Length: 202
Image 1: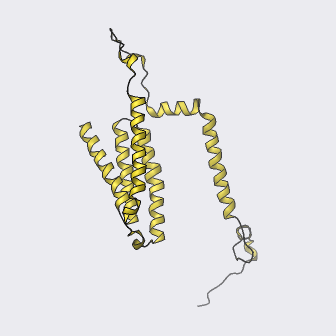
Image 2 (image 1 turned 180 degrees about the vertical axis):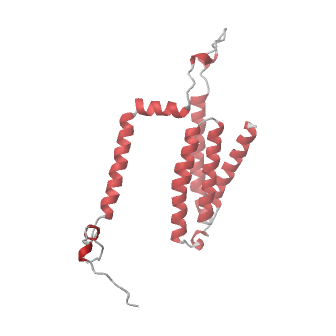
């Protein structure tokens, strides 16, 4: 069953990834990108990495993809601008793809294949190590690592996000001369005894 689900999610992932690039409608491309992220989350669930699956759904689908969809629909882009021949980009794409394939080949050769010396070693007796491993979820393990070994980097990331949020607030508070606006402080601190009431005499 897991193999069938893996093949299904993999087929959806590859098909939707191709449709993201091949679709001429930008709205359709964003929708296919959302489907790609959802299929990736399914693959992460199959390998029991629930944290990354939920992060894909919340961050990529819930924030980034929805933002892309909102921007694309608000810009009202002309589809005629995208009706260009893709053959002009074929040589550059072929070169980049060839470089990527060569890098993957050398990576698989050096990292995944065992060395000849270690492959000659023979283990005569089997020892069960499963009872030495404590049952812990990947979310708990990731939390222990982040808050134990990388707590300083985690705090720095929070400070950077705080500074960027404050900068966005400061940019919105910039006032130009000659622009009429409401003064919130004066409106809130108004004395109701000195206000003017409009009455209806009918």
